[in-house]
Length: 373
Image 1 (cartoon, rainbow, N blue to C red):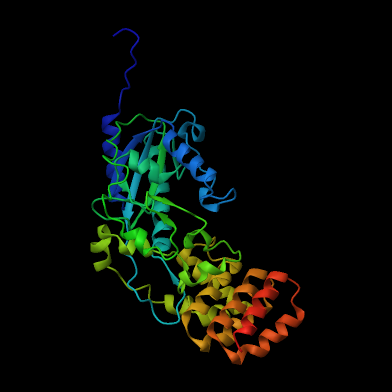
Image 2: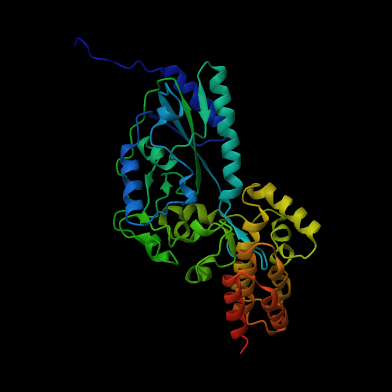
């Protein structure tokens, strides 16, 4: 028909890119077009209006809905998934827990950058890790569907996957989108498993209640959420471990890396030797990345983990946190001592209260002293 525009897809190029992606360790490769993600944008706006997402919510990461705003002339988005094995629970005693995702994701990100470089060698302009919502793109590309917990799962590997994207200016034939945005049917296992009730029955996360939304913020965590941390400092996984689609992955769970129990030692993290603490954080950064291994972020959450450990023997270590420069570390350290009921640390609390200038921290110290009777 006159005037009709027909896109010419570069079929051989799609196969070449997929082959290179698989060589780089990706197990699922899909393609979607570069049209704006209008439905995602509308849903984010709704959650803002209803208060489920705060104005400064860090997890938005300044994501945009239009690939062409990231790359003028963008034509396709290559969506990639790498499965990873979750850690076997329980973790070694005295270890600050974290999700295996945080070891797997940087590896996938590096592989996506390599794929972008390969695309450039093929004469295709490419951007790895564009500021776009990977999960929404994954569903549109047919990589998988959303669960009620807002995570994307694929048929082969469940939701224990890291998802990455490469934006390109070549027109590749798009794959069919997921048949259903959410294919959980009547299953609500994740809703029931969430320790704070953050998962809405209709399939949205209220980030005001989500433990992971607070982890690694470096801020004081609401009292009603602290117990749900358990002894983890990065990642919750309660919803994923309850999901029937992850049964196979959980059967293949692995122990943490050999050095992790020592590197992530709760007692060691509160060592009063600044040099040793810095060295430990540097080693931790190798596992979870420099951003997550910042001292304030780690110690703020590690103090909660100590409080939930049930081990009064850790009180002497976490008492060092009462003198930390950062108020959230001091506040959570006081809470941890009070929660453990560690009378041996009472004098440390009294000394800290005598010099504390922050009203919020002072309240935490007073609460902890009250627990001593």
